Length: 209
Image (cartoon, rainbow, N blue to C red; front, side):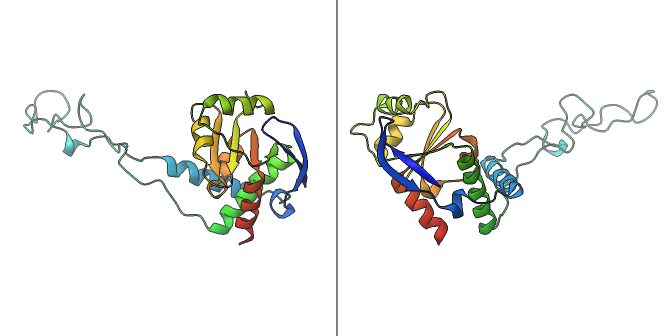
């Protein structure tokens, strides 16, 4: 798959990049995508939810009233779940939601996500660039030149670039990552996927290992 390389002004540079068919022409596996996205979202959960059970409630342990002769149900503690302010039955407890997936399955999922974006013609390649200063207006100008101002955009760099990252940090619907941080969820969550020429090479080298 051949893609034209654009500059930061949104104009063609005359150069072209050949995207690997092994990655961007991959036959998508929807179930692998489902599992990888499920794991990503599960890993984002803190799992710190907690409700108190009856043994954790502060309150008197005395018997509320005599066992028999009241005409009502028996009651032994104010901390019973049946009473207002009592403990909760089977409430949420802290837990770890993360689970394991095989590396090969995660690789299949990432390739599948990239293949879907390639089929939708949502993959853009920019020449390698840098900003002199970490100003938001620089990144806004880049998005305007590409007509991506209203689109969810994922920019993939070959390596960390502080000026580019800081310039994008205050812009909604934009995320900047490096090629080694690429994951299935971010790829599918973005409407437009923007690579630099360097990040394309880095990505292909990573999948070739």
